[in-house]
Structure formats: structure tokens, C-alpha cells
Image (cartoon, rainbow, N blue to C red; front, side, top):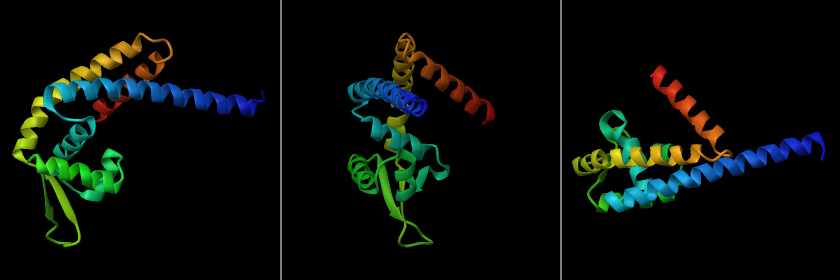
Length: 153
């Protein structure tokens, strides 16, 4: 194997490890959120992203970028949440082509109830992953990122 081949394999192995950690975390979050709050991880993420915005709203394209979904997947997800009374959409006053999405009081209440479940499931998934030698370095890196992000905020 050449040096270039080693670098390619190292990146590929790093990606597989990251994907494995992501899958473990997402599975734990999905099970906990669905069981306790009838929310998917994507639904929780949309509510959480919107609730963290000033005014609790974003344009649909901004929301799609923030939750890393396609525009059409975001639209379907917002429609489902709107149907449950958790989100509302309205036209932007200064640009009639723009549509804002915002969290309703019911959505905020559900998010408030679901946040401890999410946080506990995330902590459990990371604690469990930390016991696996192949995942422990990534868990440590996440901890360092979180600490830096919190300290600078």
C-alpha cells in the first residue's frame, strides 16, 4: 500500500467510525423521543432549531439548511408538524415570496417536555460509545468541541 493509499484508507476508516457513532446516537435518540413524546429526531431538531431563533421563526430555506434536509423533505416535515399544531407557516411581510415557519405555543411546550429526554438519551449514547475503543476518541473530540462552544458563547 502506498502512502496515498494509506491516507485514503485512514480517511475512509475515520468516516466509517464517525458514521457508526452517528448511527448509535441517532438510534438512541429516535427510540427515546418516539417512546416518550411521539417525536422523530428530525421533528425534534426542527422544533429545537426554530426555538433557538429570535422570534422562534426562520424562512423555509434557512430551516432546511439548519437541519440538513432537502427543501422538499423540510417542507413535508413542516407540514406534518403544522398538522399537529406544533408549527405555523406565514408569508414574510416584506417579501411575499418568503415563507416563515415558527414554533407554536404547543410546539414550544412539547419541545420543553422533550428536551430532557433528548439530553438524557444523548448523554447515555455518548457514555456507552465512550466504552468502545474505536469510538472513544470521537466522543472525546465531541466533548472538547462542546466545551469550547459553551465557553465562547
